[in-house]
Image (cartoon, rainbow, N blue to C red; front, side, top):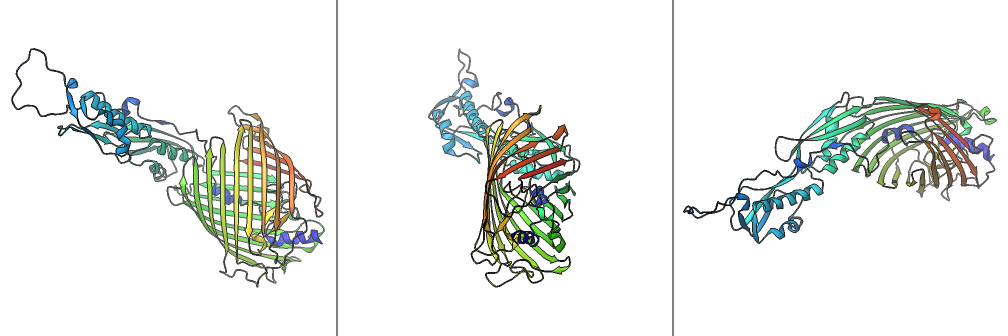
Length: 582
């Protein structure tokens, strides 16, 4: 009976849907971020435009005797040669530096006589300080003044953008582009912050390319930013065939994903997907709409995902076991830190999930403890997530933490303890490190951990086994209240195209995972709950030289044999995915 129990549990659990929320991730993930060294081309001021003018400033006035001087035999000295006693140099107009920053530059010029050229040199040093810190359009100049008590004023005009001119946009509102650029257009203007915002725009899927140049404005310190954009196609999609579905409902499946970006001109996006197993045992729909609400890419996501599952594997198909499930989610994600090198974001979401199971096609029935006698299972979950991404010259770190609070609202399932119900607390932590060993060797290390002190309904349990979990075992081989997964994969590039992108890779890997239930959970797990495997994969893109077509093959060898293994190719550790993107 363990095999039958496994099949029935899968139907009840709602684990028969896609192993990953493809649309959810599609809408919350952008194109690959650039490396730290990549940047948008900015044609800044010429060097001569950024430094103080070499033409003479107004001659610094000085109190001369009221009576005219008597003619001398020798010619009068040029203004440049006149020396003035300078007791103190006062720098005004700076909002980013203070006296401690300026003192090392000016102290050697104080308390002695200076020529006008030397005073200009002090101003040049201050300007260079700004340039070194990225404020390339700021300038310091001596003020035309009457010297009193030996105090000379040098005034800083801090750079700013007087205008942002946008060219080439067709469907994207200029306000969308301008608001994001303005995040890097503080006063004084810092070229690094400006370039960061342009880089982020450049990897935005709304655009194929972004180019920008700075031009001098009408006043000293003012600049005009010219931004030229090339918009990408709004419509995108993919079709695929793989064997990433549980064998009990049909291990092989086909799917289609469609999306449309920038529906209203403000960067909003709608996407939908449909997948069906080749045996007809599962139909999964997923629809989502995402809209940005601020320039830092704070977004609101609406998601609806109904699906239908039916056990089609012999001999249990004669029992006509089926299940239905619907998921509704509202999420708000807000980045707090966002630049090409790192991103920190928080997400608050509320998810409603309803499921029901049947036997003999139309007889409601529960197969495990938790759902009611008619097989109904309902959860209402508040989720608080934090995700952090950090890039460095050798790779990247990705960290994610998610707190799940199951609450008793909207007719959530409620049972007496310790029977699983919709009231629970769980935590999910995820970490990934991508490490560049050399130009042809990339190591990916992943780890997932779920912990809870409650007995969970099947839809909230931790799942291991399958192509995207522990290869070498069938999809959703084991589920439990808590669990972990670990994977290390080495992607070795065998071939590259003329642009230097990898086209053929092999990927040896090692993976393991385990699940466990709360000790008082009435739903008992099979004796074997620890999975470990090794194997290798093949990634070929573009497959057969067709742009957009990719092939991935994986073979996992299980190091722990299970008694309830079946005869599907997943049980032999073989997985494939053929995907065409357009």
